[in-house]
Image 1: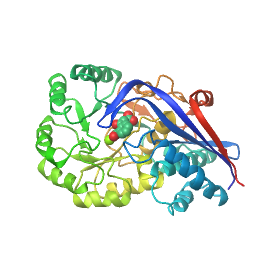
Image 2 (image 1 turned 60 degrees about the horizontal axis):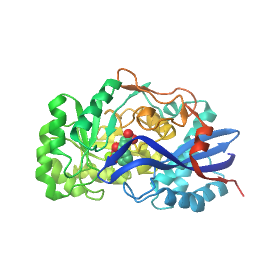
Image 3 (image 1 turned 90 degrees about the vertical axis):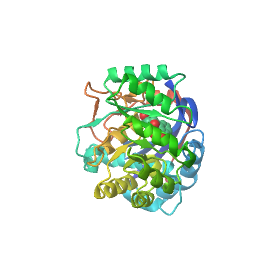
Length: 370
Ligand code: OSB
Ligand code: MG
């Protein structure tokens, strides 16, 4: 047990193309990279909280605050380095899952690197490649969206997720299905609808969607359960799934038939694996969601997605789909078959480019044991 220091950097990176959801349009991303250093080895984690509290209540500033003032001082004081022990220790604090997840991820990477194992092996993952998918935001026109889908299919993606919002839903599915009748297509509402929109969801039910993601706001398990009984398209929950407890409630209420696991949203790998194991036991397939991560967060997602119940294609795409220059080497790429090979080096298995991080850093802080 010898954590020498923890470092946090606040980064700012422009997207290659704007990303629009039911929350609004974004041109760039602000996020935190966390490093845990021990015995000369550096473990990396990414905190997926955004600049504004839209997807969740957390922001980069709330994450910075709870990590600086509570989480990091406690684990340095207790000299804890084992990620499972840290998750247990931090369970005394409420909330702030993205902040705790970033710290846990850095410690998992550190542990795996020290043991000379890839994260996938450390987790007991079963795949050497994972199935890529692409999530495409709302565009200026339906034609632009159809054109973008075509370009991604040419790159090798086999599954497309579109973002929907009131006014950009049924008509958009019609346009896509005219050109791509057999495409593996799913839609994500990010909680942008209310139970008044159930008739509209019944219209969306006619487009053979692979799944419909988070129709109602996060806390509304009951209306998702009601909706699921009225449509044949499987519902998938994203924002509603915050822990193994909310997962159990969603499954018992039959609020969804598929679960999107995001390690940041559920507060770390320990909780993500509990959710994975519960879903596996209940025959509920899962897949790995994304938060437009840099290569660090993406690497963590790739390793997590090698667990056995991750059966649907993921919101994990090639680096160049998000950023002109990723902060890892080699950048993530997809094969002609639409797969992303799992790096087999120690830990996250990709090299982190500190000079690129430095170029994008707006603030940096180092924490050492007292
Ligand atoms: O709801 O899945 C979502 C991005 C930011 C916030 C929420 C979501 C998303 C995505 C992007 O859909 C998925 C990706 O990282 O490619
Ligand atoms: Mg989603």
